[in-house]
Image (tube, rainbow, N blue to C red; front, side, top):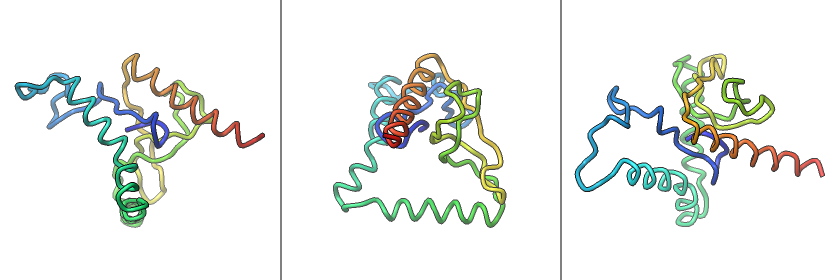
Length: 143
Protein backbone atom coordinates (compact mmCIF):
# COMPACT_ATOMS: atom_id res chain seq x y z
CA UNK A 1 0.00 0.00 0.00
CA UNK A 2 1.26 3.46 -0.86
CA UNK A 3 -0.23 6.94 -0.69
CA UNK A 4 -1.99 8.63 2.16
CA UNK A 5 -2.80 6.41 5.10
CA UNK A 6 -6.52 5.95 4.60
CA UNK A 7 -9.13 5.81 1.90
CA UNK A 8 -6.89 6.80 -1.01
CA UNK A 9 -4.04 4.39 -0.29
CA UNK A 10 -3.68 1.65 -2.87
CA UNK A 11 -1.70 -1.43 -3.84
CA UNK A 12 0.83 -1.13 -6.65
CA UNK A 13 -0.28 -4.39 -8.22
CA UNK A 14 1.90 -3.96 -11.30
CA UNK A 15 4.98 -4.28 -9.04
CA UNK A 16 3.67 -7.23 -6.99
CA UNK A 17 5.55 -10.53 -7.01
CA UNK A 18 4.92 -13.92 -5.39
CA UNK A 19 8.02 -16.06 -4.98
CA UNK A 20 9.82 -14.11 -7.67
CA UNK A 21 6.95 -14.44 -10.15
CA UNK A 22 5.17 -11.29 -11.30
CA UNK A 23 1.63 -11.41 -9.91
CA UNK A 24 0.15 -10.89 -13.37
CA UNK A 25 1.90 -14.11 -14.47
CA UNK A 26 1.20 -16.15 -11.32
CA UNK A 27 -1.24 -19.07 -11.72
CA UNK A 28 -4.62 -17.96 -10.35
CA UNK A 29 -6.81 -20.60 -8.64
CA UNK A 30 -9.73 -21.82 -10.73
CA UNK A 31 -12.98 -20.01 -10.06
CA UNK A 32 -11.25 -16.67 -9.40
CA UNK A 33 -9.84 -13.87 -11.48
CA UNK A 34 -6.82 -11.71 -10.73
CA UNK A 35 -9.06 -8.63 -10.71
CA UNK A 36 -11.38 -10.18 -8.08
CA UNK A 37 -8.44 -11.15 -5.88
CA UNK A 38 -6.87 -7.70 -6.21
CA UNK A 39 -10.10 -5.93 -5.36
CA UNK A 40 -10.82 -8.18 -2.37
CA UNK A 41 -7.36 -7.85 -0.81
CA UNK A 42 -7.08 -4.12 -1.46
CA UNK A 43 -10.42 -3.58 0.29
CA UNK A 44 -9.49 -5.88 3.20
CA UNK A 45 -6.21 -4.06 3.70
CA UNK A 46 -7.70 -0.58 3.36
CA UNK A 47 -10.45 -1.34 5.89
CA UNK A 48 -8.33 -3.31 8.35
CA UNK A 49 -7.71 -0.32 10.63
CA UNK A 50 -11.39 0.69 10.58
CA UNK A 51 -12.46 -2.86 11.44
CA UNK A 52 -10.01 -3.14 14.33
CA UNK A 53 -11.04 0.26 15.65
CA UNK A 54 -14.72 -0.69 15.39
CA UNK A 55 -14.16 -3.90 17.41
CA UNK A 56 -11.62 -2.64 19.95
CA UNK A 57 -12.09 1.13 19.98
CA UNK A 58 -8.55 1.87 18.72
CA UNK A 59 -5.57 0.45 16.86
CA UNK A 60 -2.92 1.15 19.50
CA UNK A 61 -1.56 -2.41 19.65
CA UNK A 62 -0.90 -2.56 15.92
CA UNK A 63 0.74 0.84 15.96
CA UNK A 64 2.92 -0.10 18.94
CA UNK A 65 4.04 -3.32 17.23
CA UNK A 66 5.13 -1.40 14.13
CA UNK A 67 6.94 1.19 16.27
CA UNK A 68 8.82 -1.62 18.04
CA UNK A 69 9.74 -3.18 14.68
CA UNK A 70 11.02 0.17 13.41
CA UNK A 71 13.04 0.80 16.58
CA UNK A 72 14.59 -2.69 16.41
CA UNK A 73 15.42 -2.19 12.74
CA UNK A 74 17.11 1.14 13.48
CA UNK A 75 19.00 -0.07 16.55
CA UNK A 76 20.22 -3.19 14.77
CA UNK A 77 20.87 -1.40 11.47
CA UNK A 78 18.88 -4.14 9.75
CA UNK A 79 18.14 -2.30 6.50
CA UNK A 80 14.58 -3.59 6.21
CA UNK A 81 11.91 -2.24 3.90
CA UNK A 82 8.94 -0.52 5.54
CA UNK A 83 6.21 1.69 4.11
CA UNK A 84 6.79 4.94 6.02
CA UNK A 85 5.77 8.55 5.59
CA UNK A 86 8.37 10.33 3.50
CA UNK A 87 8.62 13.20 1.05
CA UNK A 88 8.01 11.68 -2.36
CA UNK A 89 11.06 11.13 -4.57
CA UNK A 90 10.80 13.21 -7.76
CA UNK A 91 10.42 9.96 -9.74
CA UNK A 92 6.96 9.54 -8.25
CA UNK A 93 5.83 12.62 -10.16
CA UNK A 94 3.79 14.20 -7.37
CA UNK A 95 6.16 16.97 -6.27
CA UNK A 96 8.45 16.85 -3.27
CA UNK A 97 6.27 18.76 -0.81
CA UNK A 98 3.80 15.97 -0.17
CA UNK A 99 4.53 13.32 2.45
CA UNK A 100 3.15 9.90 1.55
CA UNK A 101 3.41 6.33 2.75
CA UNK A 102 6.18 4.97 0.52
CA UNK A 103 8.54 1.98 0.70
CA UNK A 104 11.88 2.91 2.25
CA UNK A 105 14.94 1.04 3.46
CA UNK A 106 15.23 1.69 7.20
CA UNK A 107 18.65 1.50 8.86
CA UNK A 108 20.56 3.09 11.73
CA UNK A 109 20.32 6.38 9.80
CA UNK A 110 16.51 6.17 9.67
CA UNK A 111 15.39 6.34 6.06
CA UNK A 112 18.48 5.16 4.24
CA UNK A 113 16.87 5.14 0.82
CA UNK A 114 13.44 5.51 -0.70
CA UNK A 115 12.43 2.82 -3.18
CA UNK A 116 10.56 3.95 -6.27
CA UNK A 117 8.01 1.38 -7.36
CA UNK A 118 7.31 1.11 -11.08
CA UNK A 119 3.68 2.05 -11.68
CA UNK A 120 1.30 1.74 -14.58
CA UNK A 121 -0.78 4.69 -15.80
CA UNK A 122 -3.74 3.82 -13.56
CA UNK A 123 -1.55 3.51 -10.47
CA UNK A 124 0.16 6.81 -11.24
CA UNK A 125 -3.25 8.49 -11.43
CA UNK A 126 -4.21 6.95 -8.06
CA UNK A 127 -0.95 8.22 -6.56
CA UNK A 128 -1.57 11.72 -7.90
CA UNK A 129 -5.12 11.66 -6.48
CA UNK A 130 -3.80 10.49 -3.10
CA UNK A 131 -1.15 13.24 -3.09
CA UNK A 132 -3.77 15.84 -4.05
CA UNK A 133 -5.98 14.70 -1.19
CA UNK A 134 -3.10 15.13 1.26
CA UNK A 135 -2.12 18.50 -0.19
CA UNK A 136 -5.72 19.65 0.18
CA UNK A 137 -5.71 18.58 3.84
CA UNK A 138 -2.37 20.33 4.49
CA UNK A 139 -3.54 23.52 2.78
CA UNK A 140 -6.76 23.57 4.82
CA UNK A 141 -4.63 23.84 7.99
CA UNK A 142 -3.31 27.25 6.87
CA UNK A 143 -6.81 28.76 6.91
